Length: 297
Picture 1 (cartoon, rainbow, N blue to C red):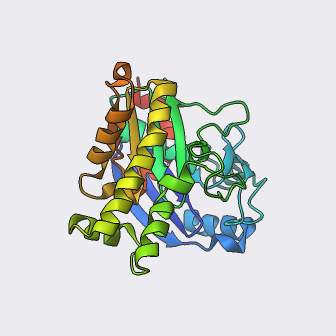
Picture 2 (picture 1 turned 30 degrees about the horizontal axis):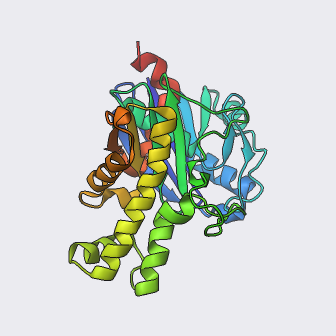
Picture 3 (picture 1 turned 120 degrees about the vertical axis):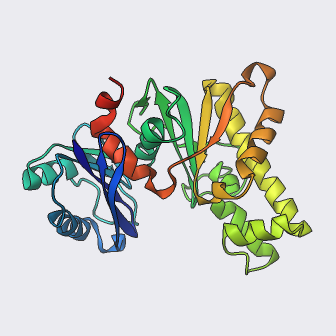
Protein backbone atom coordinates (compact mmCIF):
# COMPACT_ATOMS: atom_id res chain seq x y z
CA UNK A 1 0.00 0.00 0.00
CA UNK A 2 1.41 3.38 -1.03
CA UNK A 3 -0.09 6.65 0.16
CA UNK A 4 0.15 9.89 -1.78
CA UNK A 5 0.76 12.32 1.08
CA UNK A 6 0.20 16.03 0.57
CA UNK A 7 1.01 18.96 2.85
CA UNK A 8 -0.68 22.22 1.83
CA UNK A 9 0.71 25.48 3.14
CA UNK A 10 0.28 29.09 2.18
CA UNK A 11 3.60 29.25 0.33
CA UNK A 12 4.33 25.63 -0.65
CA UNK A 13 2.70 22.30 -1.42
CA UNK A 14 4.77 19.26 -0.44
CA UNK A 15 4.01 15.88 -2.00
CA UNK A 16 5.46 12.50 -1.12
CA UNK A 17 4.74 8.82 -1.60
CA UNK A 18 4.98 6.90 1.66
CA UNK A 19 4.98 3.12 2.00
CA UNK A 20 3.20 1.03 4.60
CA UNK A 21 6.50 0.76 6.49
CA UNK A 22 6.84 4.54 6.67
CA UNK A 23 9.48 4.85 3.97
CA UNK A 24 9.44 8.10 2.01
CA UNK A 25 9.64 6.79 -1.55
CA UNK A 26 9.56 10.14 -3.33
CA UNK A 27 9.33 13.81 -2.42
CA UNK A 28 8.66 17.03 -4.30
CA UNK A 29 7.98 20.57 -3.15
CA UNK A 30 6.10 23.07 -5.27
CA UNK A 31 5.69 26.80 -4.83
CA UNK A 32 2.21 27.94 -3.90
CA UNK A 33 0.77 31.42 -3.55
CA UNK A 34 -2.08 30.92 -1.12
CA UNK A 35 -3.09 34.56 -1.35
CA UNK A 36 -4.58 33.83 -4.79
CA UNK A 37 -7.34 31.99 -2.95
CA UNK A 38 -8.84 28.57 -2.40
CA UNK A 39 -10.13 27.90 -5.95
CA UNK A 40 -6.72 28.66 -7.46
CA UNK A 41 -5.06 26.48 -4.81
CA UNK A 42 -7.35 23.54 -5.67
CA UNK A 43 -6.60 23.97 -9.37
CA UNK A 44 -2.86 23.98 -8.60
CA UNK A 45 -3.23 20.95 -6.31
CA UNK A 46 -5.01 18.94 -8.99
CA UNK A 47 -2.32 19.82 -11.54
CA UNK A 48 0.26 18.39 -9.14
CA UNK A 49 -1.71 15.22 -8.36
CA UNK A 50 -2.39 14.64 -12.07
CA UNK A 51 1.34 14.04 -12.48
CA UNK A 52 1.47 11.36 -9.76
CA UNK A 53 1.08 7.63 -10.41
CA UNK A 54 0.87 4.35 -8.45
CA UNK A 55 -0.84 5.19 -5.17
CA UNK A 56 -3.83 3.62 -3.45
CA UNK A 57 -5.04 6.51 -1.27
CA UNK A 58 -4.48 10.23 -0.70
CA UNK A 59 -3.80 11.83 2.66
CA UNK A 60 -3.86 15.61 3.01
CA UNK A 61 -2.43 17.86 5.72
CA UNK A 62 -3.63 21.41 5.26
CA UNK A 63 -3.57 24.83 6.82
CA UNK A 64 -6.90 25.88 8.33
CA UNK A 65 -9.45 24.31 10.65
CA UNK A 66 -10.70 21.00 9.26
CA UNK A 67 -13.75 18.81 9.78
CA UNK A 68 -11.81 15.60 9.28
CA UNK A 69 -14.95 13.43 8.98
CA UNK A 70 -16.21 15.26 5.91
CA UNK A 71 -12.80 16.53 4.82
CA UNK A 72 -14.10 20.10 4.68
CA UNK A 73 -12.17 23.29 5.48
CA UNK A 74 -14.35 24.91 8.16
CA UNK A 75 -12.16 28.00 8.58
CA UNK A 76 -9.07 29.43 6.91
CA UNK A 77 -7.55 32.84 7.52
CA UNK A 78 -6.56 35.44 4.96
CA UNK A 79 -3.35 33.58 4.09
CA UNK A 80 -5.65 31.48 1.85
CA UNK A 81 -8.78 33.55 1.11
CA UNK A 82 -11.96 31.80 -0.06
CA UNK A 83 -10.65 28.44 1.21
CA UNK A 84 -13.25 28.21 3.98
CA UNK A 85 -15.99 25.76 3.00
CA UNK A 86 -13.87 23.86 0.49
CA UNK A 87 -14.99 20.20 0.41
CA UNK A 88 -11.50 18.90 -0.21
CA UNK A 89 -12.20 15.22 0.43
CA UNK A 90 -15.22 15.22 -1.90
CA UNK A 91 -13.39 17.08 -4.66
CA UNK A 92 -10.38 14.75 -4.64
CA UNK A 93 -12.34 11.49 -4.26
CA UNK A 94 -14.60 12.39 -7.18
CA UNK A 95 -11.62 13.27 -9.37
CA UNK A 96 -9.16 10.48 -8.47
CA UNK A 97 -11.46 7.61 -7.37
CA UNK A 98 -9.35 6.66 -4.32
CA UNK A 99 -9.98 7.10 -0.57
CA UNK A 100 -9.02 10.57 0.67
CA UNK A 101 -8.44 11.70 4.26
CA UNK A 102 -7.92 15.33 5.30
CA UNK A 103 -6.54 16.77 8.55
CA UNK A 104 -5.37 20.11 9.94
CA UNK A 105 -1.61 20.58 9.53
CA UNK A 106 -0.74 20.77 13.24
CA UNK A 107 -2.81 17.68 14.07
CA UNK A 108 -1.27 15.86 11.12
CA UNK A 109 2.24 16.75 12.28
CA UNK A 110 1.44 15.32 15.71
CA UNK A 111 0.16 12.09 14.15
CA UNK A 112 3.28 11.92 12.03
CA UNK A 113 5.41 12.11 15.17
CA UNK A 114 3.18 9.49 16.84
CA UNK A 115 3.61 6.84 14.18
CA UNK A 116 6.93 7.69 12.54
CA UNK A 117 8.81 10.13 14.77
CA UNK A 118 9.58 11.09 18.36
CA UNK A 119 6.23 9.83 19.66
CA UNK A 120 6.50 6.23 18.50
CA UNK A 121 6.85 4.98 22.08
CA UNK A 122 3.89 7.01 23.36
CA UNK A 123 0.14 6.65 22.88
CA UNK A 124 -0.44 9.86 24.84
CA UNK A 125 1.48 13.12 24.49
CA UNK A 126 1.24 16.83 23.79
CA UNK A 127 2.76 18.30 20.63
CA UNK A 128 3.78 21.95 20.24
CA UNK A 129 5.17 23.72 17.19
CA UNK A 130 6.94 27.07 17.60
CA UNK A 131 7.13 29.42 14.64
CA UNK A 132 5.16 32.46 13.52
CA UNK A 133 2.74 31.49 16.27
CA UNK A 134 2.43 28.39 18.45
CA UNK A 135 0.41 25.42 17.25
CA UNK A 136 -0.55 22.47 19.38
CA UNK A 137 -2.19 19.07 19.38
CA UNK A 138 -3.32 16.64 22.06
CA UNK A 139 -2.77 12.95 21.37
CA UNK A 140 -4.82 10.58 23.55
CA UNK A 141 -4.77 6.84 22.86
CA UNK A 142 -3.00 7.62 19.57
CA UNK A 143 -5.86 9.86 18.38
CA UNK A 144 -6.13 13.63 18.17
CA UNK A 145 -8.40 15.09 20.85
CA UNK A 146 -10.38 17.84 19.11
CA UNK A 147 -12.78 19.17 21.73
CA UNK A 148 -16.38 20.34 21.34
CA UNK A 149 -15.91 22.40 18.18
CA UNK A 150 -12.88 20.62 16.75
CA UNK A 151 -10.38 23.31 17.70
CA UNK A 152 -8.75 21.97 20.88
CA UNK A 153 -5.01 22.54 21.19
CA UNK A 154 -4.87 26.31 20.67
CA UNK A 155 -2.00 26.46 23.14
CA UNK A 156 -0.66 29.63 21.58
CA UNK A 157 -3.56 31.46 23.17
CA UNK A 158 -3.14 30.27 26.74
CA UNK A 159 -3.26 33.40 28.89
CA UNK A 160 0.18 33.72 30.49
CA UNK A 161 0.36 37.45 31.21
CA UNK A 162 -2.99 39.15 31.94
CA UNK A 163 -3.18 42.60 30.30
CA UNK A 164 0.11 41.82 28.57
CA UNK A 165 1.30 42.15 24.98
CA UNK A 166 -1.39 42.33 22.28
CA UNK A 167 -1.98 39.18 20.24
CA UNK A 168 -3.15 38.82 16.65
CA UNK A 169 -6.22 36.98 17.98
CA UNK A 170 -7.47 40.28 19.39
CA UNK A 171 -6.73 39.43 23.01
CA UNK A 172 -3.68 40.26 25.14
CA UNK A 173 -1.11 38.28 27.09
CA UNK A 174 -1.27 35.11 24.96
CA UNK A 175 1.49 32.50 25.15
CA UNK A 176 2.57 32.95 21.52
CA UNK A 177 3.07 36.69 22.03
CA UNK A 178 5.93 35.74 24.37
CA UNK A 179 7.16 32.28 23.37
CA UNK A 180 6.83 32.00 19.58
CA UNK A 181 9.83 32.38 17.29
CA UNK A 182 8.25 35.63 16.14
CA UNK A 183 8.29 36.92 19.73
CA UNK A 184 11.96 36.01 20.14
CA UNK A 185 12.97 37.71 16.89
CA UNK A 186 10.93 40.80 17.68
CA UNK A 187 12.94 41.32 20.86
CA UNK A 188 16.23 40.45 19.18
CA UNK A 189 15.63 43.02 16.43
CA UNK A 190 15.17 45.68 19.10
CA UNK A 191 18.88 45.11 19.83
CA UNK A 192 19.97 44.93 16.19
CA UNK A 193 17.79 44.75 13.07
CA UNK A 194 20.24 42.24 11.56
CA UNK A 195 19.00 39.59 14.02
CA UNK A 196 16.23 38.52 11.65
CA UNK A 197 16.31 34.73 12.09
CA UNK A 198 16.88 32.17 14.81
CA UNK A 199 20.20 30.95 13.44
CA UNK A 200 21.74 34.42 13.73
CA UNK A 201 20.26 34.97 17.19
CA UNK A 202 21.65 31.71 18.54
CA UNK A 203 25.03 32.27 16.91
CA UNK A 204 25.38 35.46 18.96
CA UNK A 205 23.98 33.64 21.99
CA UNK A 206 26.68 30.97 21.72
CA UNK A 207 29.33 33.66 21.24
CA UNK A 208 28.35 35.20 24.56
CA UNK A 209 26.78 38.44 23.35
CA UNK A 210 25.16 39.56 26.60
CA UNK A 211 22.07 41.43 25.30
CA UNK A 212 21.07 38.42 23.20
CA UNK A 213 21.86 35.98 26.00
CA UNK A 214 19.45 37.86 28.26
CA UNK A 215 16.75 37.84 25.60
CA UNK A 216 17.17 34.11 24.90
CA UNK A 217 17.12 33.26 28.62
CA UNK A 218 13.90 35.26 29.02
CA UNK A 219 12.42 33.53 25.98
CA UNK A 220 13.32 30.05 27.25
CA UNK A 221 11.61 30.96 30.51
CA UNK A 222 8.46 31.99 28.61
CA UNK A 223 8.50 28.74 26.62
CA UNK A 224 8.80 26.79 29.87
CA UNK A 225 5.94 28.69 31.53
CA UNK A 226 3.47 27.46 28.92
CA UNK A 227 4.81 23.91 28.93
CA UNK A 228 4.64 23.83 32.73
CA UNK A 229 0.92 24.64 32.62
CA UNK A 230 0.34 21.85 30.10
CA UNK A 231 2.28 19.38 32.22
CA UNK A 232 0.18 20.23 35.27
CA UNK A 233 -3.09 20.02 33.30
CA UNK A 234 -2.50 16.83 31.31
CA UNK A 235 0.21 14.97 33.25
CA UNK A 236 1.52 13.55 29.95
CA UNK A 237 4.43 11.12 29.69
CA UNK A 238 5.94 13.31 26.97
CA UNK A 239 5.73 16.71 25.35
CA UNK A 240 7.14 16.91 21.82
CA UNK A 241 8.30 20.34 20.69
CA UNK A 242 9.11 21.28 17.11
CA UNK A 243 9.56 24.14 14.69
CA UNK A 244 12.79 25.26 13.07
CA UNK A 245 13.92 27.18 16.15
CA UNK A 246 13.99 23.97 18.21
CA UNK A 247 16.79 22.59 16.04
CA UNK A 248 19.28 24.97 17.67
CA UNK A 249 21.99 23.13 19.58
CA UNK A 250 21.03 22.02 23.11
CA UNK A 251 17.93 24.24 23.12
CA UNK A 252 15.46 21.48 23.95
CA UNK A 253 17.70 20.37 26.83
CA UNK A 254 17.72 23.93 28.20
CA UNK A 255 13.93 24.12 27.95
CA UNK A 256 13.52 20.76 29.68
CA UNK A 257 15.81 21.87 32.50
CA UNK A 258 13.75 25.03 32.98
CA UNK A 259 10.48 23.09 32.92
CA UNK A 260 11.81 20.66 35.53
CA UNK A 261 12.66 23.61 37.78
CA UNK A 262 9.05 24.86 37.53
CA UNK A 263 6.88 21.75 37.79
CA UNK A 264 5.85 19.96 40.95
CA UNK A 265 7.99 16.96 41.81
CA UNK A 266 5.10 14.54 41.25
CA UNK A 267 5.16 15.48 37.53
CA UNK A 268 8.92 15.12 37.07
CA UNK A 269 8.73 11.95 34.94
CA UNK A 270 7.58 13.94 31.91
CA UNK A 271 9.99 13.92 28.95
CA UNK A 272 10.50 16.98 26.77
CA UNK A 273 11.42 15.65 23.33
CA UNK A 274 12.52 17.31 20.12
CA UNK A 275 10.28 16.58 17.13
CA UNK A 276 12.03 14.17 14.79
CA UNK A 277 10.43 14.70 11.39
CA UNK A 278 11.16 18.37 10.75
CA UNK A 279 9.23 19.95 7.90
CA UNK A 280 8.07 16.54 6.66
CA UNK A 281 5.96 15.83 9.77
CA UNK A 282 2.80 16.93 7.97
CA UNK A 283 3.48 14.52 5.11
CA UNK A 284 3.97 11.57 7.43
CA UNK A 285 0.88 12.60 9.37
CA UNK A 286 -1.14 12.73 6.16
CA UNK A 287 0.00 9.18 5.38
CA UNK A 288 -0.84 8.02 8.90
CA UNK A 289 -4.50 8.96 8.34
CA UNK A 290 -4.67 5.80 6.21
CA UNK A 291 -1.87 3.71 7.74
CA UNK A 292 -2.48 4.09 11.49
CA UNK A 293 -4.80 1.08 11.81
CA UNK A 294 -2.31 -1.10 9.92
CA UNK A 295 0.70 0.17 11.89
CA UNK A 296 -0.89 -0.59 15.27
CA UNK A 297 -2.08 -4.09 14.37
